Length: 450
Ligand code: ADP
Image (cartoon, rainbow, N blue to C red; front, side, top):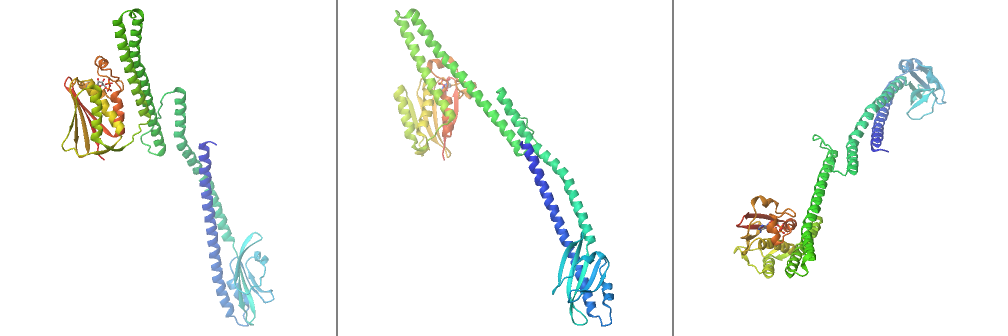
């Protein structure tokens, strides 16, 4: 069964059920009250009659008194101890079928006799001779019946007429709920067939959950499209970047093949170039793999770390590897000794920046460690070639290099800073670059104090 049909069916049935229960309740309460009122009236009249009978003398004809108090549509009887009717005054012969009952206490009952509802009240009385007889007052409930029938008719009409708005509202409700879902299904099918990242048309004035569903769907589509384009860009950049070293290797290999075996100069030049390009290619592939891994999930393992020790170790390794001057300058007010971070990731981050500072400068590199109330700052400053101001916003993009010629010499891949950006994000570190062309570059790492 379709969702629309289910909504129709269940909402209509439920509303109808509520309507029927309400109407049946109204009918039952009303009829109960009406019978109660009739009974009270009859009892009040009977009490007056009983009083009048008790005042009666030997000479009084009981029929005269009964006539005076007989109900408009019914009868009054005096029944003796043998169960025989002694006197009866009636205003309708429909009461003839009402049986005489032997009672010792006051009783009342409603019977349906020959299709007519009758209320019978039996009261024990002491007659003029001192014997206990019974006064039976019978009221035919024609008016009550008519009123109740009318009420039932009205309530049935209300139920039938009420079904129309219930049906209309259930159709509207079904449409309201299923239309956005239908739209969603159609868009998804279109996406499946076309392979595009289609969005749903949404209206701004709707703020319900279904509108939220549409907005969330559109946001997801935007995100998926953005990620897909990023991936596509990455694959195309990666293949383009790998093509260059491969072309260099191929051309040198064919040069050696053609002329080189006997020429040691060509062999030396070729092996050097092939080695350099192979190393670059290996670095690039390693960094690409790391970026791909970090894209999925960068696992950060924070532990209490001696921050200065970590920085000193990194600087020592850099000095050893490149035989260059790295000056570590710690602010005299620096206090934080233990800091919670991922030591390996922080080292990797420092290596990337120190390596760039070394690659793009000839002179010594300075590391300033300072502290503010909220941050620990590590500033890495080189006096190198610097970055043109228009290039600064792009240096963290994948495969971005300021200019091909100067980077070829340094063997860069254009992936170091994008890797650094991912690691810094994982470690909650803010990065700032200040650079002046041909003067130098300062990269500041801001480590948030917790
Ligand atoms: P690469 O492997 O080419 O160094 P990066 O992503 O690390 O790639 O850096 C991107 C580009 O930013 C570099 O190619 C370089 O042109 C520029 N750059 C980065 N750091 C510095 C620096 N300290 N001085 C001058 N230029 C820099």
